[in-house]
Length: 230
Image (cartoon, rainbow, N blue to C red):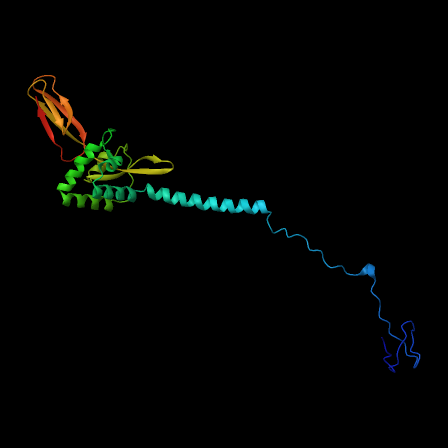
């Protein structure tokens, strides 16, 4: 209900003037329904990724971190420090089979056999001071990388490392390192034809003539039980 602002009398809605004092009535404009302001329609946010895209984004991030982690682990497992660590563990555990896996000869592609690795371990056991100095040499070697087939191989051996960390091929995308050692050779002299030479329980040579010589190797420096019999 409205009242006149001039005299306070009650106003009739349809009158333009107050019936008591004749003062013009200020009519409130009725809102036009057609002009009514409609509340804004909220559109779907374009910043939100669809569910499938969000899932693939998460998968991509996970895969990326897995690849990075795998690379770091792979690089560590094939590093120079790792092969030195494997050597140290094999020597401590007297594991000839494991030791033979990462030992190579400097001037031949002949494989290092488990029996040779046993002889080498026997040598280290009999000479603990030498075993300690070898390990220290390996740990102290610089970060220089040497490939087994490099032309300057002999020059580098002049540094008088008994064992040398060398790059020897690749494992997937990673450089693979091994421990290189200069092999030893033994020359047998047989006075009589038919003389047999044994390395432990293994027959390694039989003379086919009197006064025959035979070079046996390559061998790792170590302690071997060589004997001959007729």
